[in-house]
Amino acid sequence: MSLPKIEIDVNKIRKNTEYLTTLCKKNHIQVAGVTKVFCAMPEVVEAMIHGGIAYIADSRIENLKPFKNYELPKILLRLPMISEAKRVVEYADISLNSELDTIRALNKEARQAKLKHQVILMIDLGDLREGFFGKEDLYATIRETMTLDHIEIIGIGTNLTCYGGVVPTKEILSKLVTYKEEIETDFGIKLKILSGGNSSSLHLIEKGTMPEGINHLRLGEAIVLGRETAFGLSIDNTYEDCFRLQAEIIELKSKPSLPVGEIGMDAFGNKPSFVDRGIRKRAILAIGKQDVSISDLIPYDREIYLLGMSSDHLIVDVTDSNNDYRVGDSLSFTLTYGGILSTMTSHYIHKYII
Ligand SMILES: *Cc1c(COP(=O)(O)O)cnc(C)c1O
Image 1: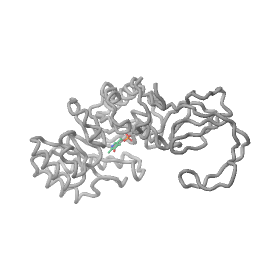
Image 2 (image 1 turned 120 degrees about the vertical axis):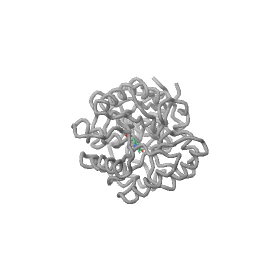
Image 3 (image 1 turned 30 degrees about the vertical axis):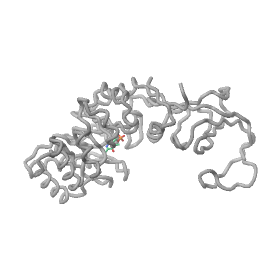
Image 4 (image 1 turned 90 degrees about the horizontal axis):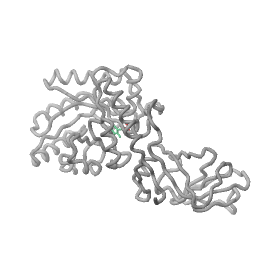
């Protein structure tokens, strides 16, 4: 197997998904499996499907494309670009929306394609990323959207803990339930989906305070990392190590911990600083910033220390390790969410399903 590589344990992905979809089902909530962090790699998506997700959800059309003929409905998570409206109606059954001009463009393309495109209208409950802010704009949009014959409003949703870091509470999500009731009364329509957020909303289920009526969550990180994202806590009965990165040692030498000579700038224009720990055994690994950020790597060997990274090199202090590393050996890491995102996106990292 070629290095550097990321190994993906799809059995663990399936089990994490099963646990979370079962938990949500008990609370009358359907799960949209969010696939963007692993670029919707088909084997991993399949594992999520076996684990019981009800929708495939991704922020990019490129990632949804291969699943065109799958039975599960596809949701486009990022607000559509008007310039991609044609592809949106072709590859996504449902999209999240907050702009009337975009919905009009989707309607036009859906008419061309002789199909009906479904939309979930996003309401900003304070996190200040996407969504209608206040009722006036929302109501004007619903009024006009109802006149478009190739668009169906199937629900409303919200997104939290993404930009503003706002933690979902019973009070905040109850506002979404209230919006739904008022819209149904005021417009005489039925909203079948009430999408209450992402992995940061899971803690409400655990506490038993998820408002009645929320029937849909969009889960990514909770499935791939076994973590909820309101407080960053591990979820019991789930695996945190579905993804494992390995990189190879290309140099292993004892060197001083202080550079020799006048200190100017490093490869990225920053002036580095150092602590003198004397002569240390240092390994260089063949992986760099082009693949992943150093702060996203969590070494399995707890006795090693990550010193720094340039575009293609990771420098590691292995002096205190109990392992007798040799050139050609590889070191293993688990990853943060950002680490999975960047390594799965890197062309240089080989991906293996186990
Ligand atoms: C990425 C994304 C999600 C999934 O978030 P997680 O924290 O990974 O569960 C849900 N909804 C939207 C709109 C997203 O962009």
